[in-house]
Length: 225
Image (tube, rainbow, N blue to C red):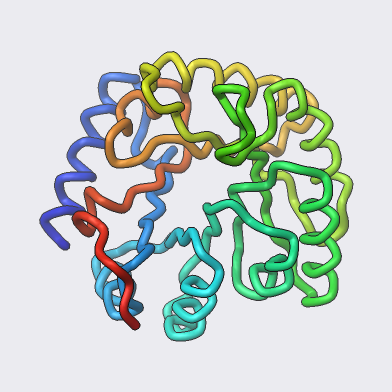
């Protein structure tokens, strides 16, 4: 695990040099899906402060088990509105806000829990929301909705590079969308982009948050608690 983190950090450092950026501009979110809470503890011991999860059932259990570590929990998977109450109880950042009904549900539950949750508008860069994400033409209105919702803070945008497309081209489009969101909401500076296979392209196009799992923890296996 330490060796994996060292390799990821070396790749990030090289990409930052190539893009003329500083490492401090980037947050590494360790994606621990299918791995147990004990691995999250090991990551925390190596200096990881931000952890990402895709499934509420798994995430909520790990957040409870690791509550003493002071980690920031990122929910990065597609989120159904009936899971909003649970997610609002532990997630500090939700990366996958892609429709008005979800904004309403998260706002209601965040207020009920007395929490303030940072939300990112997920963008479907291929224009197909079936995999999660709002169409690019829907992003501005959705960002406005998040910014105006109680209990929520608009953090910025998130996207996954479409399958079969050059990630650099996809992230360049996201960069322009992020700029438009910032024009209306200067505080929305987060650009969540880049995973194990496309870190360099994401960094070159202004990513601030990198969601890395496989390069840190290896190939996924069935999760056993």
